[in-house]
Image (cartoon, rainbow, N blue to C red; front, side, top):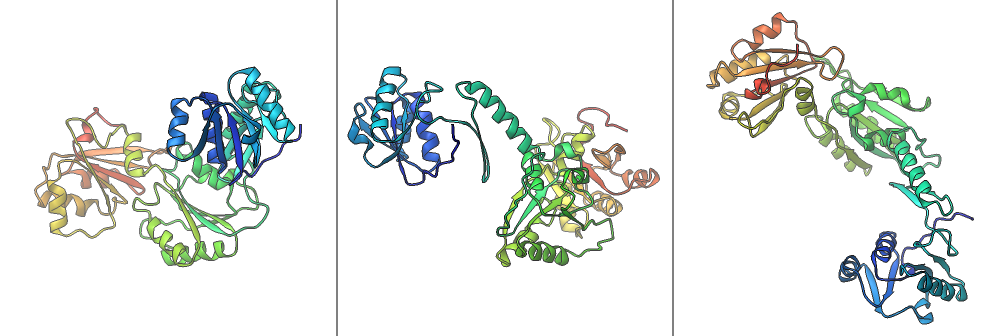
Length: 397
């Protein structure tokens, strides 16, 4: 058997049959862009919906030779072996390839098990053993999703930028799409808080650009990061901007997207697990909990808050999560207290969340700045203010 991938866009494909099998074939063919003509006496509910939506055409009756005029491919999917064989004979007489999905191994063409990931299509055939083919396809799909498959382009195309949210630094919390995009990268521009452990999985010739920032030390300004992303993509390379957390949650992802768009560079954003929720979870703290908090506010510790801002935050009954908040802890606690927040409000500072060095420091709002200072708490850490801190009992050490 010679495997081929067919471009069916705008081409007529005839499906004989009106049951669930024909519905599956029609749906997949329509998704591939084919002009689908279903020939059947009756349509099952799913096919009626497809017909009603305009995705397929329907001629009532049994398949005739005239139905194949202008067709490029035939699917004999009536569910009746004799009717399928008759449809296959009509297709053979017209020198049309015919798939008989209800009878594996029959027909002049066969449906493989297919894995689709963006523009990558992998098809697997195992003769009449369709279960074996499906199992192999699932395995190959998992390899692709894990980033273990070689996905980098060998033919240079238009460059692009992909902002990948890496989560709180634990590689296992990086999304499948994020891993797949990393496997496609020619250049990776990485933050300090990103899951840098995955960089060891990259091909040796993938360029890694470290633009990591620490508290009070920004060696690579944001404007320079934007320039690196744009210039590298314009040179025809695939650039992955690997960030900690989520690109759109206090990650300056919006600024990078705007810079790419202004330069005419294709840009994609892959969401990540934000540290605002993942790091408290690592310490056993739910950011919302029945009876403790129904809402959560995420705040940057780098923001300069005035009295009105702190007053509004102090009046909130939900949880306050502060990213990059260690340096601002004294100012934040004092401002919330001055604005009327209960001094006994529980506060947790979770340092190095999801790492082997993770530790949690807790104290009432009135004491948290002093306790954290005495404990030597340092960045990176996430501050959680609210009753959720003790909602599930004592937090970890």
